[in-house]
Image 1: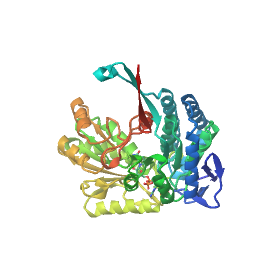
Image 2: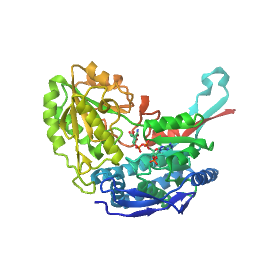
Image 3: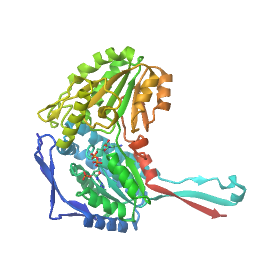
Image 4: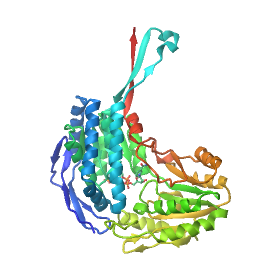
Length: 475
Ligand code: NAP
Protein backbone atom coordinates (compact mmCIF):
# COMPACT_ATOMS: atom_id res chain seq x y z
CA UNK A 1 0.00 0.00 0.00
CA UNK A 2 1.14 3.53 -0.74
CA UNK A 3 1.82 5.42 2.45
CA UNK A 4 2.95 8.97 1.78
CA UNK A 5 0.92 12.01 0.83
CA UNK A 6 3.15 14.64 -0.70
CA UNK A 7 2.17 18.13 -1.76
CA UNK A 8 4.41 20.13 -4.01
CA UNK A 9 4.15 23.59 -5.50
CA UNK A 10 5.47 24.37 -8.97
CA UNK A 11 9.10 25.50 -9.14
CA UNK A 12 9.16 28.51 -11.45
CA UNK A 13 11.97 31.02 -11.82
CA UNK A 14 13.51 30.05 -8.49
CA UNK A 15 10.27 30.24 -6.49
CA UNK A 16 7.84 27.60 -5.26
CA UNK A 17 4.43 28.84 -6.35
CA UNK A 18 0.79 27.86 -6.07
CA UNK A 19 -1.34 28.28 -9.16
CA UNK A 20 -4.81 27.84 -7.71
CA UNK A 21 -5.16 24.50 -9.42
CA UNK A 22 -3.85 21.08 -8.39
CA UNK A 23 -3.06 17.86 -10.17
CA UNK A 24 -3.58 14.66 -8.20
CA UNK A 25 -0.98 11.91 -8.31
CA UNK A 26 -2.44 8.43 -7.79
CA UNK A 27 -0.82 5.12 -6.97
CA UNK A 28 -1.03 2.88 -10.06
CA UNK A 29 -1.44 -0.04 -7.62
CA UNK A 30 -4.16 1.08 -5.21
CA UNK A 31 -5.59 4.06 -7.08
CA UNK A 32 -5.32 6.15 -3.92
CA UNK A 33 -4.01 9.70 -4.04
CA UNK A 34 -0.34 9.76 -2.99
CA UNK A 35 0.29 13.41 -3.66
CA UNK A 36 -0.72 16.54 -5.48
CA UNK A 37 1.23 19.15 -7.37
CA UNK A 38 0.42 22.70 -8.43
CA UNK A 39 -0.85 22.56 -11.99
CA UNK A 40 0.83 25.14 -14.20
CA UNK A 41 0.53 26.04 -17.87
CA UNK A 42 1.61 28.35 -20.67
CA UNK A 43 2.06 31.51 -18.60
CA UNK A 44 4.29 29.79 -16.01
CA UNK A 45 6.29 28.19 -18.84
CA UNK A 46 6.88 31.62 -20.40
CA UNK A 47 7.97 33.01 -17.04
CA UNK A 48 10.32 30.06 -16.68
CA UNK A 49 11.88 30.80 -20.08
CA UNK A 50 12.25 34.50 -19.17
CA UNK A 51 14.02 33.49 -15.95
CA UNK A 52 16.23 31.00 -17.79
CA UNK A 53 17.27 33.71 -20.24
CA UNK A 54 18.07 36.04 -17.37
CA UNK A 55 20.03 33.31 -15.54
CA UNK A 56 22.16 32.44 -18.56
CA UNK A 57 23.29 36.08 -18.87
CA UNK A 58 25.50 35.36 -15.86
CA UNK A 59 27.16 32.05 -16.71
CA UNK A 60 28.06 29.75 -13.81
CA UNK A 61 31.73 28.75 -13.93
CA UNK A 62 32.46 25.05 -14.34
CA UNK A 63 33.68 24.57 -10.77
CA UNK A 64 30.39 25.93 -9.38
CA UNK A 65 28.31 23.77 -11.71
CA UNK A 66 30.32 20.72 -10.66
CA UNK A 67 30.00 21.57 -6.96
CA UNK A 68 26.22 21.90 -7.26
CA UNK A 69 26.01 18.56 -9.07
CA UNK A 70 28.12 16.86 -6.39
CA UNK A 71 25.96 18.32 -3.62
CA UNK A 72 22.87 16.88 -5.32
CA UNK A 73 24.53 13.45 -5.14
CA UNK A 74 24.91 13.95 -1.39
CA UNK A 75 21.28 15.12 -1.13
CA UNK A 76 19.99 12.02 -2.87
CA UNK A 77 22.17 9.82 -0.65
CA UNK A 78 20.82 11.52 2.47
CA UNK A 79 17.18 10.95 1.46
CA UNK A 80 17.67 7.67 -0.42
CA UNK A 81 14.93 5.70 1.31
CA UNK A 82 12.34 8.49 1.12
CA UNK A 83 13.09 9.05 -2.59
CA UNK A 84 12.82 5.34 -3.44
CA UNK A 85 9.48 5.14 -1.63
CA UNK A 86 8.22 8.15 -3.53
CA UNK A 87 9.19 6.61 -6.89
CA UNK A 88 7.43 3.43 -5.83
CA UNK A 89 4.32 5.34 -4.74
CA UNK A 90 3.89 7.47 -7.83
CA UNK A 91 5.04 5.02 -10.52
CA UNK A 92 3.96 1.73 -8.91
CA UNK A 93 7.57 0.59 -9.23
CA UNK A 94 8.60 -2.28 -6.94
CA UNK A 95 10.60 -0.87 -4.08
CA UNK A 96 13.74 -2.85 -4.88
CA UNK A 97 13.77 -1.44 -8.44
CA UNK A 98 13.03 2.04 -7.07
CA UNK A 99 16.08 1.77 -4.82
CA UNK A 100 18.24 0.87 -7.82
CA UNK A 101 16.84 3.85 -9.72
CA UNK A 102 17.68 6.15 -6.80
CA UNK A 103 21.28 4.96 -6.71
CA UNK A 104 21.51 5.33 -10.47
CA UNK A 105 20.44 8.97 -10.22
CA UNK A 106 23.42 9.52 -7.90
CA UNK A 107 25.61 7.98 -10.55
CA UNK A 108 24.13 10.20 -13.27
CA UNK A 109 24.83 13.37 -11.24
CA UNK A 110 28.33 12.14 -10.40
CA UNK A 111 29.22 11.58 -14.05
CA UNK A 112 27.71 14.96 -14.96
CA UNK A 113 29.93 16.66 -12.35
CA UNK A 114 32.97 15.05 -13.98
CA UNK A 115 31.84 16.33 -17.38
CA UNK A 116 31.34 19.85 -16.04
CA UNK A 117 34.94 19.92 -14.86
CA UNK A 118 36.50 18.62 -18.07
CA UNK A 119 34.33 20.36 -20.65
CA UNK A 120 36.78 21.81 -23.19
CA UNK A 121 37.25 22.34 -26.89
CA UNK A 122 40.25 21.23 -28.91
CA UNK A 123 43.25 22.58 -30.73
CA UNK A 124 43.05 22.79 -34.52
CA UNK A 125 46.37 21.97 -36.26
CA UNK A 126 46.40 25.11 -38.42
CA UNK A 127 49.75 24.62 -40.14
CA UNK A 128 48.46 21.37 -41.62
CA UNK A 129 47.20 23.60 -44.44
CA UNK A 130 49.54 26.06 -46.11
CA UNK A 131 47.05 28.89 -45.64
CA UNK A 132 46.94 28.17 -41.92
CA UNK A 133 50.63 28.80 -41.31
CA UNK A 134 51.20 31.49 -38.74
CA UNK A 135 47.78 31.04 -37.17
CA UNK A 136 46.65 29.48 -33.91
CA UNK A 137 43.15 27.99 -33.68
CA UNK A 138 41.09 26.17 -31.12
CA UNK A 139 37.45 25.55 -30.30
CA UNK A 140 35.41 26.46 -27.26
CA UNK A 141 32.40 24.41 -26.22
CA UNK A 142 29.58 26.86 -25.58
CA UNK A 143 26.24 26.00 -23.99
CA UNK A 144 23.60 25.59 -26.69
CA UNK A 145 21.16 27.85 -24.83
CA UNK A 146 17.94 27.28 -22.91
CA UNK A 147 16.90 23.63 -22.88
CA UNK A 148 13.28 22.47 -22.81
CA UNK A 149 13.21 18.98 -21.24
CA UNK A 150 10.29 16.56 -21.35
CA UNK A 151 10.43 13.28 -19.42
CA UNK A 152 8.33 10.07 -19.21
CA UNK A 153 6.69 8.29 -16.30
CA UNK A 154 8.76 5.14 -16.12
CA UNK A 155 11.98 6.42 -14.51
CA UNK A 156 10.61 9.54 -12.81
CA UNK A 157 13.90 10.26 -11.02
CA UNK A 158 16.78 8.96 -13.10
CA UNK A 159 15.48 10.01 -16.50
CA UNK A 160 14.86 13.47 -15.09
CA UNK A 161 18.44 13.33 -13.77
CA UNK A 162 19.60 12.49 -17.31
CA UNK A 163 17.92 15.73 -18.46
CA UNK A 164 18.90 18.11 -15.65
CA UNK A 165 22.42 17.06 -14.71
CA UNK A 166 24.08 17.13 -18.17
CA UNK A 167 22.30 20.39 -19.03
CA UNK A 168 23.76 22.05 -15.93
CA UNK A 169 27.16 20.49 -16.67
CA UNK A 170 26.95 22.06 -20.14
CA UNK A 171 26.02 25.45 -18.67
CA UNK A 172 22.42 25.46 -19.89
CA UNK A 173 19.31 26.57 -17.98
CA UNK A 174 16.41 24.11 -18.14
CA UNK A 175 12.63 24.26 -18.22
CA UNK A 176 11.43 20.74 -17.38
CA UNK A 177 8.02 19.24 -18.01
CA UNK A 178 7.81 15.91 -16.15
CA UNK A 179 5.18 13.24 -16.88
CA UNK A 180 1.82 14.18 -15.34
CA UNK A 181 1.52 10.74 -13.75
CA UNK A 182 4.88 11.00 -11.94
CA UNK A 183 5.87 14.62 -11.23
CA UNK A 184 6.81 14.18 -7.53
CA UNK A 185 10.35 12.86 -8.01
CA UNK A 186 11.16 15.62 -10.52
CA UNK A 187 10.04 18.29 -8.07
CA UNK A 188 12.05 16.65 -5.32
CA UNK A 189 15.11 16.78 -7.54
CA UNK A 190 14.46 20.49 -8.12
CA UNK A 191 14.38 20.95 -4.34
CA UNK A 192 17.73 19.17 -4.05
CA UNK A 193 19.26 21.33 -6.82
CA UNK A 194 18.01 24.47 -5.10
CA UNK A 195 19.42 23.30 -1.75
CA UNK A 196 22.68 22.52 -3.52
CA UNK A 197 23.03 26.19 -4.42
CA UNK A 198 21.53 26.46 -7.91
CA UNK A 199 20.74 30.15 -8.43
CA UNK A 200 17.19 31.17 -9.48
CA UNK A 201 16.17 30.70 -13.11
CA UNK A 202 18.55 27.86 -13.95
CA UNK A 203 15.76 25.33 -13.44
CA UNK A 204 11.98 25.47 -13.53
CA UNK A 205 9.69 22.44 -13.28
CA UNK A 206 6.25 22.86 -14.83
CA UNK A 207 3.60 20.18 -14.42
CA UNK A 208 0.36 20.49 -16.36
CA UNK A 209 -1.17 20.16 -19.81
CA UNK A 210 1.46 18.59 -22.06
CA UNK A 211 0.32 20.34 -25.20
CA UNK A 212 0.12 23.78 -23.53
CA UNK A 213 3.60 23.53 -22.03
CA UNK A 214 4.99 21.73 -25.09
CA UNK A 215 3.66 24.48 -27.39
CA UNK A 216 5.59 27.18 -25.50
CA UNK A 217 8.79 25.12 -25.57
CA UNK A 218 8.37 24.52 -29.31
CA UNK A 219 7.35 28.05 -30.24
CA UNK A 220 9.65 30.18 -28.07
CA UNK A 221 12.77 30.88 -30.12
CA UNK A 222 14.86 31.37 -27.00
CA UNK A 223 14.54 27.64 -26.28
CA UNK A 224 17.39 26.31 -28.42
CA UNK A 225 17.12 22.60 -27.65
CA UNK A 226 14.40 20.19 -26.68
CA UNK A 227 15.44 16.98 -25.03
CA UNK A 228 12.59 14.48 -25.02
CA UNK A 229 12.27 10.97 -23.64
CA UNK A 230 8.98 9.21 -24.29
CA UNK A 231 6.92 7.69 -27.03
CA UNK A 232 7.77 8.01 -30.72
CA UNK A 233 4.45 9.54 -31.72
CA UNK A 234 4.94 12.54 -29.44
CA UNK A 235 8.71 12.81 -29.97
CA UNK A 236 8.84 12.83 -33.76
CA UNK A 237 5.94 15.33 -33.89
CA UNK A 238 7.92 17.69 -31.64
CA UNK A 239 10.94 17.37 -33.95
CA UNK A 240 8.76 18.12 -36.98
CA UNK A 241 7.32 21.21 -35.32
CA UNK A 242 10.69 22.62 -34.24
CA UNK A 243 12.91 22.47 -37.33
CA UNK A 244 15.24 25.23 -36.15
CA UNK A 245 15.89 23.72 -32.73
CA UNK A 246 18.03 20.81 -31.79
CA UNK A 247 15.51 18.11 -30.80
CA UNK A 248 17.08 15.12 -29.04
CA UNK A 249 14.81 12.10 -28.97
CA UNK A 250 15.07 9.02 -26.71
CA UNK A 251 12.15 6.79 -27.71
CA UNK A 252 10.80 3.25 -27.49
CA UNK A 253 11.93 -0.21 -28.55
CA UNK A 254 10.63 -3.76 -28.99
CA UNK A 255 13.76 -5.25 -27.47
CA UNK A 256 15.04 -8.49 -29.02
CA UNK A 257 17.47 -11.06 -27.66
CA UNK A 258 19.05 -13.89 -29.62
CA UNK A 259 20.00 -17.07 -27.75
CA UNK A 260 22.48 -19.02 -29.90
CA UNK A 261 22.67 -22.81 -29.58
CA UNK A 262 26.12 -22.51 -27.99
CA UNK A 263 24.97 -20.03 -25.29
CA UNK A 264 25.16 -20.53 -21.54
CA UNK A 265 21.45 -21.28 -21.23
CA UNK A 266 21.31 -20.91 -17.46
CA UNK A 267 22.75 -17.41 -17.69
CA UNK A 268 20.44 -16.51 -20.58
CA UNK A 269 17.33 -17.84 -18.83
CA UNK A 270 18.16 -16.04 -15.58
CA UNK A 271 18.84 -12.74 -17.35
CA UNK A 272 15.67 -12.97 -19.46
CA UNK A 273 13.40 -13.80 -16.51
CA UNK A 274 14.83 -10.91 -14.52
CA UNK A 275 14.62 -8.38 -17.34
CA UNK A 276 11.43 -9.10 -19.27
CA UNK A 277 9.12 -8.37 -16.34
CA UNK A 278 10.91 -5.97 -14.00
CA UNK A 279 8.72 -2.91 -13.42
CA UNK A 280 6.04 -4.84 -15.33
CA UNK A 281 8.02 -4.49 -18.56
CA UNK A 282 7.78 -0.69 -18.52
CA UNK A 283 11.36 0.02 -19.43
CA UNK A 284 12.23 1.12 -22.96
CA UNK A 285 14.71 -1.78 -23.08
CA UNK A 286 12.62 -4.42 -21.34
CA UNK A 287 13.22 -7.80 -23.03
CA UNK A 288 10.26 -8.34 -25.37
CA UNK A 289 11.30 -10.83 -28.08
CA UNK A 290 13.48 -13.89 -27.53
CA UNK A 291 14.76 -15.86 -30.54
CA UNK A 292 16.34 -19.20 -29.61
CA UNK A 293 18.26 -21.40 -32.06
CA UNK A 294 16.15 -24.53 -32.40
CA UNK A 295 18.58 -27.06 -30.91
CA UNK A 296 18.56 -25.07 -27.64
CA UNK A 297 14.86 -24.12 -27.61
CA UNK A 298 13.46 -26.78 -25.24
CA UNK A 299 16.43 -26.64 -22.92
CA UNK A 300 16.11 -22.85 -22.74
CA UNK A 301 12.42 -23.03 -21.87
CA UNK A 302 13.14 -25.69 -19.20
CA UNK A 303 15.41 -23.17 -17.52
CA UNK A 304 13.40 -20.03 -18.26
CA UNK A 305 9.84 -20.97 -17.28
CA UNK A 306 10.46 -21.96 -13.63
CA UNK A 307 12.26 -18.67 -13.12
CA UNK A 308 9.31 -16.76 -14.58
CA UNK A 309 6.89 -18.68 -12.38
CA UNK A 310 8.97 -17.83 -9.31
CA UNK A 311 8.56 -14.07 -9.81
CA UNK A 312 6.54 -12.40 -7.06
CA UNK A 313 3.60 -10.38 -8.40
CA UNK A 314 1.97 -7.87 -6.07
CA UNK A 315 2.16 -4.65 -4.11
CA UNK A 316 5.12 -2.53 -5.27
CA UNK A 317 5.65 -1.30 -1.71
CA UNK A 318 6.40 -4.86 -0.62
CA UNK A 319 10.14 -5.56 -0.48
CA UNK A 320 9.64 -9.00 -2.06
CA UNK A 321 7.67 -7.86 -5.13
CA UNK A 322 9.23 -8.31 -8.58
CA UNK A 323 6.27 -7.39 -10.77
CA UNK A 324 3.76 -4.68 -9.85
CA UNK A 325 1.07 -2.82 -11.78
CA UNK A 326 1.30 -1.11 -15.15
CA UNK A 327 0.85 2.64 -15.04
CA UNK A 328 -2.92 2.91 -15.58
CA UNK A 329 -6.08 1.23 -16.74
CA UNK A 330 -5.68 2.35 -20.36
CA UNK A 331 -2.24 0.69 -20.50
CA UNK A 332 -3.64 -2.46 -18.86
CA UNK A 333 -6.49 -2.71 -21.35
CA UNK A 334 -4.22 -2.16 -24.35
CA UNK A 335 -1.75 -4.81 -23.21
CA UNK A 336 -4.53 -7.33 -22.58
CA UNK A 337 -5.94 -6.60 -26.06
CA UNK A 338 -2.56 -7.30 -27.64
CA UNK A 339 -2.30 -10.57 -25.70
CA UNK A 340 -5.78 -11.51 -26.93
CA UNK A 341 -4.78 -10.72 -30.50
CA UNK A 342 -1.84 -13.13 -30.16
CA UNK A 343 -4.01 -15.84 -28.57
CA UNK A 344 -6.63 -15.49 -31.33
CA UNK A 345 -3.89 -15.84 -33.97
CA UNK A 346 -2.85 -19.20 -32.53
CA UNK A 347 0.12 -18.20 -30.38
CA UNK A 348 0.64 -20.31 -27.28
CA UNK A 349 0.41 -18.86 -23.74
CA UNK A 350 3.19 -20.52 -21.74
CA UNK A 351 2.52 -18.34 -18.69
CA UNK A 352 0.22 -15.52 -17.62
CA UNK A 353 -1.90 -13.90 -20.29
CA UNK A 354 -4.54 -12.54 -17.97
CA UNK A 355 -5.34 -10.00 -15.32
CA UNK A 356 -5.66 -10.86 -11.62
CA UNK A 357 -6.65 -8.27 -9.03
CA UNK A 358 -5.73 -5.49 -11.46
CA UNK A 359 -2.27 -6.91 -12.23
CA UNK A 360 -1.06 -8.61 -15.42
CA UNK A 361 1.05 -11.62 -14.50
CA UNK A 362 4.35 -12.29 -16.30
CA UNK A 363 3.21 -13.45 -19.72
CA UNK A 364 5.24 -15.72 -22.00
CA UNK A 365 3.92 -16.19 -25.53
CA UNK A 366 5.39 -18.89 -27.78
CA UNK A 367 5.25 -18.97 -31.57
CA UNK A 368 4.03 -15.42 -32.01
CA UNK A 369 4.04 -14.41 -35.68
CA UNK A 370 6.14 -11.34 -36.60
CA UNK A 371 3.15 -9.25 -37.68
CA UNK A 372 1.42 -9.50 -34.28
CA UNK A 373 1.54 -6.34 -32.14
CA UNK A 374 3.35 -8.23 -29.35
CA UNK A 375 6.08 -8.98 -31.91
CA UNK A 376 6.44 -5.72 -33.79
CA UNK A 377 5.21 -2.92 -31.54
CA UNK A 378 6.45 -1.85 -28.11
CA UNK A 379 4.32 -3.70 -25.52
CA UNK A 380 5.53 -1.75 -22.47
CA UNK A 381 4.04 -4.44 -20.27
CA UNK A 382 5.05 -7.74 -18.62
CA UNK A 383 4.95 -9.71 -21.87
CA UNK A 384 7.66 -11.58 -23.75
CA UNK A 385 7.53 -13.72 -26.89
CA UNK A 386 9.74 -16.78 -27.37
CA UNK A 387 10.30 -18.21 -30.84
CA UNK A 388 12.62 -20.93 -32.18
CA UNK A 389 14.75 -19.99 -35.20
CA UNK A 390 16.66 -22.16 -37.66
CA UNK A 391 19.76 -20.02 -38.07
CA UNK A 392 21.57 -16.94 -36.89
CA UNK A 393 20.61 -15.27 -40.19
CA UNK A 394 16.96 -15.77 -39.43
CA UNK A 395 17.39 -14.52 -35.85
CA UNK A 396 19.15 -11.35 -36.98
CA UNK A 397 16.56 -10.70 -39.66
CA UNK A 398 13.70 -11.09 -37.16
CA UNK A 399 15.48 -8.98 -34.54
CA UNK A 400 15.96 -6.20 -37.13
CA UNK A 401 12.44 -6.62 -38.46
CA UNK A 402 10.69 -3.85 -36.53
CA UNK A 403 10.83 -0.07 -36.83
CA UNK A 404 12.78 0.16 -33.56
CA UNK A 405 16.51 0.20 -32.87
CA UNK A 406 17.44 1.05 -29.27
CA UNK A 407 19.25 -1.94 -27.74
CA UNK A 408 19.41 -5.64 -28.62
CA UNK A 409 21.17 -8.62 -27.07
CA UNK A 410 22.78 -11.92 -27.91
CA UNK A 411 23.87 -14.87 -25.80
CA UNK A 412 26.62 -16.96 -27.39
CA UNK A 413 29.95 -18.49 -26.46
CA UNK A 414 31.48 -17.78 -29.90
CA UNK A 415 33.37 -14.55 -30.37
CA UNK A 416 32.64 -14.53 -34.11
CA UNK A 417 28.89 -14.79 -33.48
CA UNK A 418 29.01 -11.99 -30.92
CA UNK A 419 30.95 -9.71 -33.26
CA UNK A 420 28.71 -10.52 -36.18
CA UNK A 421 25.66 -9.60 -34.08
CA UNK A 422 27.43 -6.38 -33.06
CA UNK A 423 27.89 -5.48 -36.72
CA UNK A 424 24.55 -6.62 -38.11
CA UNK A 425 21.98 -5.81 -35.42
CA UNK A 426 20.65 -2.36 -36.34
CA UNK A 427 20.47 -0.88 -32.85
CA UNK A 428 22.13 1.89 -30.85
CA UNK A 429 23.61 -0.77 -28.56
CA UNK A 430 24.24 -4.52 -28.72
CA UNK A 431 24.75 -6.31 -25.41
CA UNK A 432 26.55 -9.65 -25.39
CA UNK A 433 25.89 -12.31 -22.74
CA UNK A 434 23.79 -9.96 -20.64
CA UNK A 435 20.21 -8.77 -21.03
CA UNK A 436 19.80 -5.85 -23.46
CA UNK A 437 18.07 -4.13 -20.53
CA UNK A 438 21.54 -3.51 -19.15
CA UNK A 439 22.49 0.12 -18.74
CA UNK A 440 24.91 2.04 -16.62
CA UNK A 441 24.56 5.78 -16.64
CA UNK A 442 27.81 6.78 -18.31
CA UNK A 443 27.18 4.57 -21.36
CA UNK A 444 26.25 6.21 -24.69
CA UNK A 445 22.60 5.28 -24.73
CA UNK A 446 20.14 5.93 -27.52
CA UNK A 447 18.54 4.55 -30.63
CA UNK A 448 18.48 4.43 -34.40
CA UNK A 449 15.45 4.14 -36.71
CA UNK A 450 12.22 5.08 -34.88
CA UNK A 451 13.92 4.74 -31.48
CA UNK A 452 15.53 8.16 -31.59
CA UNK A 453 18.31 10.36 -32.84
CA UNK A 454 20.64 11.07 -29.94
CA UNK A 455 22.78 9.57 -27.18
CA UNK A 456 22.41 10.15 -23.46
CA UNK A 457 24.88 9.47 -20.69
CA UNK A 458 26.36 12.71 -19.34
CA UNK A 459 29.44 12.77 -21.60
CA UNK A 460 27.31 12.35 -24.73
CA UNK A 461 24.42 14.53 -23.57
CA UNK A 462 26.82 17.38 -22.77
CA UNK A 463 28.22 17.06 -26.28
CA UNK A 464 24.65 17.35 -27.62
CA UNK A 465 23.89 20.40 -25.48
CA UNK A 466 27.01 22.39 -26.37
CA UNK A 467 28.18 23.92 -29.63
CA UNK A 468 31.68 24.31 -30.92
CA UNK A 469 32.90 27.83 -31.48
CA UNK A 470 36.07 28.26 -33.50
CA UNK A 471 38.65 30.87 -32.52
CA UNK A 472 41.40 31.67 -35.04
CA UNK A 473 44.29 33.95 -34.03
CA UNK A 474 46.74 35.52 -36.44
CA UNK A 475 50.11 35.37 -34.73
P1 NAP B 1 4.69 9.78 -23.57
O1 NAP B 1 3.24 9.54 -23.42
O2 NAP B 1 5.22 10.08 -24.91
O3 NAP B 1 5.01 11.00 -22.56
C1 NAP B 1 6.33 11.45 -22.38
C2 NAP B 1 6.28 12.91 -22.00
O4 NAP B 1 5.79 13.68 -23.10
C3 NAP B 1 5.34 13.21 -20.83
O5 NAP B 1 5.90 14.21 -20.01
C4 NAP B 1 4.11 13.73 -21.54
O6 NAP B 1 3.31 14.56 -20.74
C5 NAP B 1 4.76 14.53 -22.65
N1 NAP B 1 3.89 14.88 -23.77
C6 NAP B 1 2.80 14.21 -24.24
N2 NAP B 1 2.26 14.90 -25.28
C7 NAP B 1 3.02 16.01 -25.46
C8 NAP B 1 2.98 17.13 -26.34
N3 NAP B 1 2.03 17.24 -27.28
N4 NAP B 1 3.92 18.09 -26.23
C9 NAP B 1 4.87 18.01 -25.30
N5 NAP B 1 4.96 16.99 -24.42
C10 NAP B 1 4.06 15.99 -24.50
O7 NAP B 1 5.55 8.58 -22.97
P2 NAP B 1 5.35 7.80 -21.59
O8 NAP B 1 4.15 6.94 -21.70
O9 NAP B 1 5.48 8.73 -20.43
O10 NAP B 1 6.67 6.91 -21.59
C11 NAP B 1 6.75 5.70 -22.24
C12 NAP B 1 7.54 5.81 -23.53
O11 NAP B 1 8.81 6.37 -23.26
C13 NAP B 1 7.82 4.44 -24.12
O12 NAP B 1 7.68 4.49 -25.51
C14 NAP B 1 9.28 4.19 -23.74
O13 NAP B 1 9.96 3.29 -24.55
C15 NAP B 1 9.83 5.57 -23.86
N6 NAP B 1 11.08 5.67 -23.11
C16 NAP B 1 12.25 5.79 -23.80
C17 NAP B 1 13.46 5.85 -23.10
C18 NAP B 1 14.77 6.03 -23.79
O14 NAP B 1 15.72 6.44 -23.13
N7 NAP B 1 14.89 5.74 -25.07
C19 NAP B 1 13.44 5.78 -21.71
C20 NAP B 1 12.22 5.64 -21.06
C21 NAP B 1 11.04 5.61 -21.77
P3 NAP B 1 1.99 14.00 -19.96
O15 NAP B 1 2.51 13.00 -18.99
O16 NAP B 1 1.46 15.22 -19.31
O17 NAP B 1 1.11 13.42 -21.00
